[in-house]
Amino acid sequence: MSRSARLLDLIQLLRRHRRPLSGHAIAGALGVSLRTLYRDIATLQAQGARIDGAPGLGYALRDGYLLPPLMFAADEVEAIVLGMRWVSERGDAQLAAAARDALAKIAAVLPAELRHELDTAALLVGPGSEPARVDEAAVRLAIRRQHKLRIDYRDADGRASRRLVWPFALGYFDRVQVIVAWCELRGATRHFRSDRIAALEATAERYPRSRQQLLKDWKREQGIAAADGI
Image (cartoon, rainbow, N blue to C red; front, top):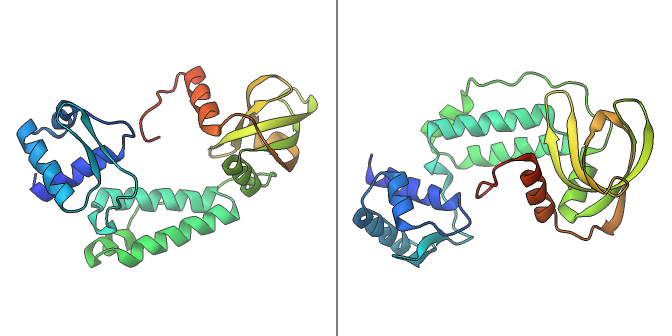
């Protein structure tokens, strides 16, 4: 592995973790000695990378350090194209347009050889199913603002109810979207299929807990590992 590739891997490793990583853990992940790791960190710091830490304390990359897009590998370009194409087909109109705009911005700054990889990517996404009846853009906005939603919902047995919920996640599946929310009626987290929501009304009322904590609690309940950076 070239030194430039190793430095990039080091930055990417630090970027994926919010908490400091020990030198031993980083060196083990990269397959290098501690001496080489310390030298690489010093090199990156001299080039402007905002890496905090010291031997024995661990290292973390501070927010605000951006890698130039030209550092993408071919596989990473394919992953970006596939993801953006999926969102373009499965997301609501606003999200689909954002995905196309983001891909255009990335393409504009890629070097010629990587631009060719992007333009000729052969990973395709088939057309999505019928669009959801709910306004997904309104759901996403409520999640960002941590606002409550009022929904008219029909469960799997056809029973109708009106719920006041605290939305904190939106799951995308091939045929349906699922709103993950704390339900005031049930006093617990529930999963609401978009195709069973007859009506949705956004409110200006913030819910009392942070969406990050709600998501963390839900992951724990579901047995989902709380990976750093996710």
